[in-house]
Length: 467
Image (tube, rainbow, N blue to C red; front, top):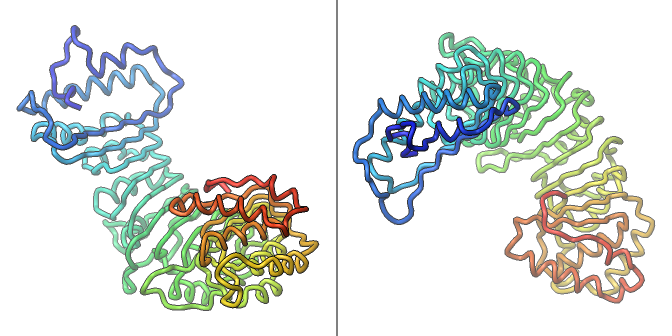
């Protein structure tokens, strides 16, 4: 970083000369800048006490020219900035000057821009005023004026928006024109809209877009309070939405029910559906079984179904009344606690599902606290003889058992009852108990009730999220 604050001449290597020494790279389409300023324990040495903004501006221009000459076809830029404490005053000034000039480093017609921990400035928004961006990714979006301007200026060309952390109010600002507050900012070509996490709550009396700002959307994902409560956004995406991943709350769901947005078969092209109930102190209770029925109604053509935090009642009886989609291959039910009877009932109800990710619960207070008795294991073996589930890959997201040994016992029993299972993946989030769990699985496999079950020893057991 300090190199930008030095005089560049033909005798001393600098950032621009290093780039020019490379052969031309016409096939390069993307470039990443990692602006990392670090110091451990004490302030950095400060050999140059002065920071020359004019010199930095000149050197950034030279460096940008070298980049464009060496990589003439690059149009994608990733900029990651990490500022660490204890920087010397002049280095802090250098950093601020370089970051302020980042607009010069992303080209004149960028098509993809990714910003991580980078303050958006007037210069950065002005460089994209000609609406060239097709994709933008932001590590944070709080709905501030310059942030919103950067996105809205490219509304006519954007095909993908990815935001890691935001708020419902900020996402509403994204579709509201500041110059005409009652008008909607439309994104006519946007195909993918992802907000990884939307913190905070909605304004119950705030403005909402009366029409869908995303008329061609194929992917819609938003965790946290869904920002657009008027049914228009989802209703007008029904014919073309392929991937839907949202969290529901009572207010939003009531609005969707009233408009009949979640009617059976409403989303004909949906291949991925993830619905979860918003786990929030201010979220009102709701009949989760009803939501379960709605989910299955929506996913008649779905390949992947994800249901989080459902807390379903009478699961075994519930599953007996429903029909899972025939095209379902992946079933993901993290943090919906299932005992072994309930897990088997669900897997048998959708025999076409090759992958399943579940959370395992104990079987009840009357079954003891330690290892299940051999008689109990044999009763389960006899009860589920001929189970027609075809699951090949089983993921265990979490467990709620009295000990890791009991969890391991029920895991082995589940694999024994469903012999099609070839791999079990334990979520790496359990690192504190993982080693003990794996040892307990090995011990459980050696119990006498499994003596004539060689397939148990061929099942692959690993720690991975790739279930």
